[in-house]
Image 1 (cartoon, rainbow, N blue to C red):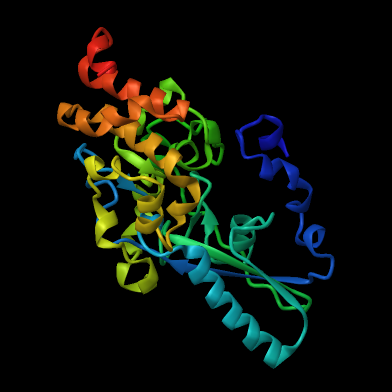
Image 2 (image 1 turned 135 degrees about the horizontal axis):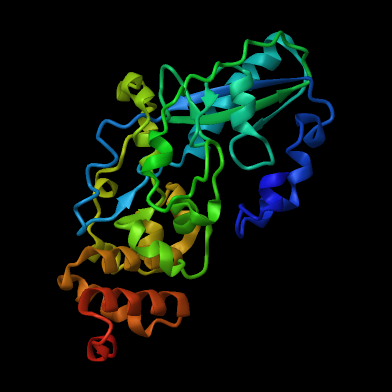
Length: 318
């Protein structure tokens, strides 16, 4: 795969390790004869970009403000799978983002939507806000018509990217993507991307949020499990920076955020604190200067430097 050969997957070695199984469904399961693709809306009620200038809070990607989508989508897939076996027999396997399955091109082939220039699926009905689930079955089913690409000449999703992660339609470099940097990447966030991260502490919705097709997406169509938890709509950075492992696990119980762990999450919050321009956050940042995790300690030092200036060694050693 060219994308992997160019190392655009960054440190996501799990993509490279099982790339051969992504080529075709039968490479993963030889008995597969048909693929059933399903989408579940998580269209938000509020504008995901509304908090961009409120630097006292952290922004969490829409998909992660409610319950973990893996559990919700898989439960629905299993219910459909039981119905299918009862009525038509055959064998099957269900997948929700945890196996080497090419969900987006398979869903496009099934007619749910098309892959937009931001590489994500776009639906006429649900816009860019869709979780995808896949069922492989040994049954030979009549295929649906594939979706037609109707992005036209629009490049809003490419133009809005804060880190210029796209170098053309459907060409993304994960190493520059804020979602990758705040979720998948475990080391220090490269200096050249830190200012662009702003107050994003988990993921980024910018390229999805500006898609014109979202004007047809209705929040009422979203599964109730994906409704944002009140405490995750606009969490205060000062409070998040107080989290330890126990309180982090408690706050994000049942959330996809839990999987990145408290240290990576604190790193993200420290970068956002540095971008806030609010020296009142120093009291929340200061305890992390002495962290035993060098990534956290370095992020805290960077945050203090941003808040007080590079020449203020006194504040960095308080």
